[in-house]
Image 1 (cartoon, rainbow, N blue to C red):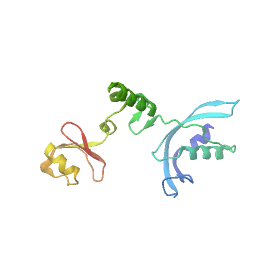
Image 2: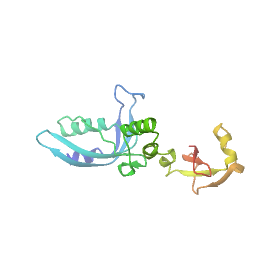
Image 3: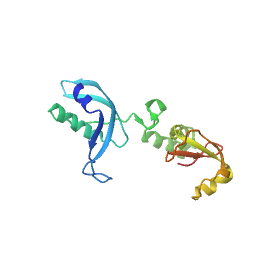
Image 4: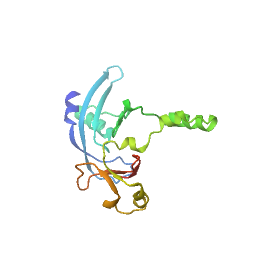
Length: 177
């Protein structure tokens, strides 16, 4: 199993499943690392962890693992413990938490739980380089105007052509990506 997981690291060819929201064309996705965690002989089930590129089909990785082992393999459960810059240690919440917070707010007017479970968009953009614009330029940018130098207050060093950045107000509120 360890050797098969080792072979499934790096660039892999994957095709989206039959029922998919995207065109079913062959694509390359990268598996950065994988770890074999546990195996239950009685139930013939194993647990492994994979660090992969966004858009990877983990179910397909399981099928490929079964082909390498010559036994077949199917995924019973998928647990995403990281997405982008957010991981389990960042107080991730479930949809049930959000529904509970909404119920508490609607029935008791208590918004404290709601404020704890819903994070601002800016929490996801902490790794992006920033351009801080004047408050007077924000409205025009929101309506599609180009960012012009007179509207810029500050910007991060090292911004490269075609790099994804975030445009923020002086208060740190995201305006555009």
